[in-house]
Image (cartoon, rainbow, N blue to C red; front, side, top):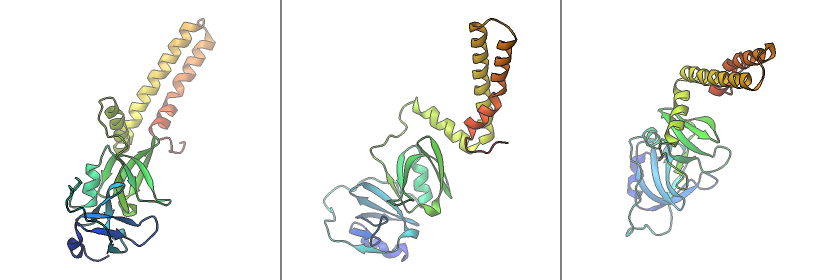
Amino acid sequence: MAHNSQLYNLVGSQVKVNRGGPDSIEGQLLGVHSDYMVLNTNNGVVYVTTYHVKSISQASGNQNSGSTMPQYIQSYSMSGVLNQLRHQHVQINRGGPEKIAGLVIDTSPNMIILVVNNEIIRIPLTHVKSITVVTSGKTIKTKAEAPAITTIQAAVTNPEAAIVRAAVTARAAATDRAAAIAREAPAGPAAEAEAEAAAETAPEAARVAADPEAPNK
């Protein structure tokens, strides 16, 4: 793709990025930055990584010169844009098998981490062709939602600490179960054995809770 400086003259114009397929995007070019451009499309603001742009052409249509330009994130790089999209629902890529939508919980200069249906997905930035903010989704607004996201972030950035916390939770649950057994059944070897078995499962429950995809050790 041509150097971004050659695209500045198209800012404000209707353009078509790529000629066809799921990566084709048409809209008003809002801005051009170091490694991404921003388009205002019928589906909202789309951030497009210029590395994956194969062509860009000026399209016919109104340039909306009299309308208010939508607000969008302005950062030096796409990595900076992603950093400001934390706790927002986004769609990565426009279509095909690489399309995915989820909640951004963390980013790094080389990676974006999403939660998709309670599963943590890590996507290298080299595979991110475009990002669309899902306006119908939710941002973290309530105090009740924030701790859950904080817990997931902690598990991603510090898995060892997450295992310890999960172990404490699992052992507490095992203790509660043992107490319930003692209340509901007469004291005896059978009840004690069941309580001990419940406690012994706590480490494995903690491991699974912290990293369900990790192999058994």
